[in-house]
Amino acid sequence: MTKKDFFRVLIKIFTLYGLLISVVSFINQIALLGQSFNDIFFLVAVIGSFSVALIFLYLVINFTDNIISFLKLDSGFDDDKIVFGNLNNQSLYKIAIVLLGGFLMVDAFPRIILDLVNSSKILVSNNQLFNQETDYYWVIIRVFNLVIGYVLITNASRIAKFLDKN
Image (cartoon, rainbow, N blue to C red; front, side, top):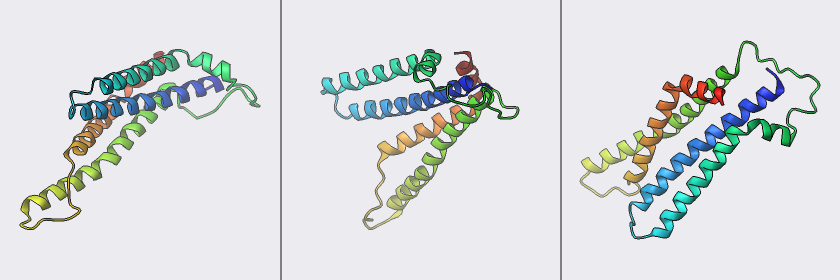
């Protein structure tokens, strides 16, 4: 793998991570918007910022080589090759996608379990329990993150082929 290929893969991995974070935060903001339907400025700001983020990420994916040459990321090294063994671009993409999905799942799963335990404590308790509240908004967001992580892990090959094609 050449240095340019390595930086191309690295930029696309971070772009995928940025896309994932943008989608999750967009859904969070839309869910918050559902609580107050009368705030049109908030709706325009959320959709506008999400659109700008998507355009930026699209440009980064499609003009990766221009970014590498503009920032001169592939210059200043002693050797032109980077040796990773038998790993190719798609293998690196798959590893990164599985790690991203795993991070989402590992972050969301324990919190969902804790929220379910707290909810069951509240349901069976006769007394009011302090500091044992469950915010169902965040439970839904965590379940959504869990599903996104699962979809990323199970479709890592397809996403890797798409990123390698661009």
